[in-house]
Image (cartoon, rainbow, N blue to C red; front, side, top):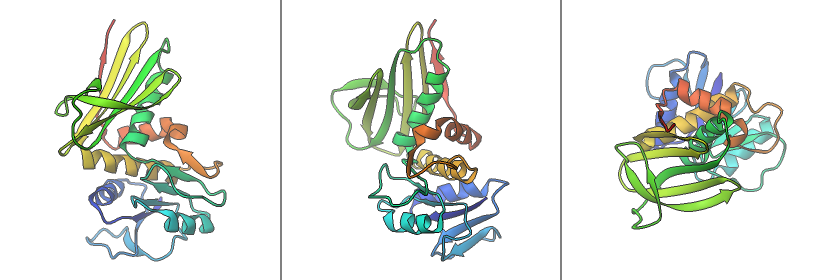
Length: 241
């Protein structure tokens, strides 16, 4: 695998270290930045050509995505949406906790549910805690939080819980004949890095092959979650009988 990584923040830095842990990684190109360290797979990248995927945590990735599209290289972005995307080259959007990790975990649980029922997907995001709303009990050390509903799609409801500090969490609750809950809690920056790195590895492995334009994580949820687990994501679960 040859991956080009753009980003100077802690999320991209941690994602880079996760990618360097992959045995199949041949090259990790740092976009217009000289590498630090003695890993021979690290190199400065001045062009997107020659890479299997371009990955960025930029808030405005449009310019780099356009370059990748012109070269026919798939892109993975941390943000949930990009501007007008021209061409058929696939772009995986939302490689983050709320739009990537959370729905991937939910898709896996829904696919394995004996009797589909109400599904609640909740995640934390930076912000001042709410004083009321929908109660969500994330795994410790995040713990119980108030959340607001973001959207609803049939029997699936999505909630975001503003949470200060360095910890973040995801919780999926499935209510049917029995109730099943799965959750994740870890350092926020680590979960974001896992989410971005998983997107990079999924794309580099060819999961976007044959797809055109903007692709959401939900469309490649199983492959995405498999990579997250391989990267070390720890999931807690609880079931009522």
